Structures are given as C-alpha cells and as structure tokens.
Image (cartoon, rainbow, N blue to C red):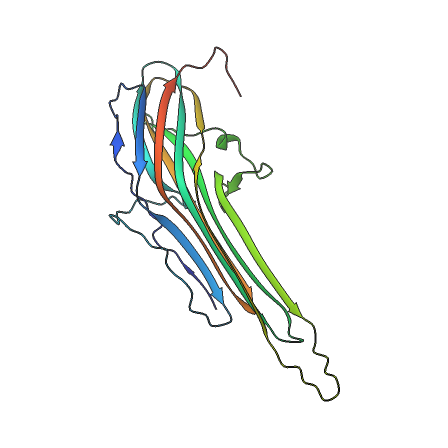
Length: 253
C-alpha cells in the first residue's frame, strides 16, 4: 500500500516592510510552515506524521507546477534599473528507511526522498508580464542545483536528499543438530534543519511598479519492498530583501 499525504502546502505572505512605492529597497518575512510527506510500508509500522501547518492557517494559491508564494513585496522603478533579490529560508528534511529480511528471502529495499526548491519572479503591474530571476532563468537539467518539475519549470535546489537502504540475507545453512531461524531488521532515520540564502538577479527592468514574489515548492517520495519508507520536506521561517541598483554600462550575462 502506498499513499501520499500532503500537509500544509501553504504559506503566509508575512508582514511586509518598507513598501513605499518610491523606495530603493523593500523587504518581507515568512512565518508560516509548509511541508509534504510521502510514506509506504510493508512491515505494518505506525508512520510518523508530525509535519503540519501552524500559525494562522491562511492559504495561498499553488501554481500548476506546485510552487506557492511565501513572501512578496512591491517596488517602483523610476528609470531602467536592476533588482537584487535575496531570500533566506529555513528548510528541513526527514527520511526514514526500514527493512526486514529473513534467510533466503531476497533483498529488501526502502527508499525515501525529499526536497525544497525556490524561485523568484517579478510581475510588471501595468502589463502583467512575469519575469523569472537569474540564474534560474537559464536553468536546464544538466546544471547541478536546477530542479525541474513535471511541467519543465525550474527552481533552485535548497535541500534535496535520497536515502536508500538495501538488505539481503543469504539462505541459512544448518549444521547437523543445529538450527537457523532468525530475522534481521535495520532502521535508518535522518533529520536535518538548515538555513539557506540564494541571490536572484533581474537585470535591466524598465520603468514601472513591480511585484516581487518568492515561491517555494516541496516534494517527497517513498518506495518500499519488504520495508518501510517515509520522506518529508518542510520550509518555515524566512526573510526577503530587495534592492534597486544600476549595473555597469552594457552589463550582460
């Protein structure tokens, strides 16, 4: 039996500071928690489902490629300038793999995975045009750190883990007058929490008022054959700073 439990894949666009439309800088914070959990068991364990949404419980729209806006702010650009966008986010991963084998029973396998991904977009309020920030704008599947969803949309990888546990016991060889009856159970659990900052660049934006949005996605997966697997990923506390700058003449990537 395999089931997917998605818990709190929502976030709260937190309090926003310095939103004067003529500001050269602006900021925002995130205090909501979003997470997703995938699990599968063939042993019959009671699976830990501690990942949950807290604080206000307010939800936001999730895009078709499973990104949710977690922080946003607005800035007005009076002439052709560029934006430096720097979000920081606390992320967490939980993976559990457990296998049970009997003599001659073949190989037992459990695989758990989780990941947290981020991108920044800017929307021109007058035209509705959406721009994805660099370097994600030039991502492809060959670049380490670029995560592509099922629709081919990219985000930068903040955290990612695949945990695999394989276990095999050979057939029991019984000596004269002896016996051989035993099982072998192995359980491996990893939990991490970390804080990340990634800088996004929007070069040469035209005059206008722009909404900057930081969007996060989490995913998890689990597979088991003769075992139990749990994969979970979460994000929480975060901050965002945006600065309007003028790059050197003829700047390009």
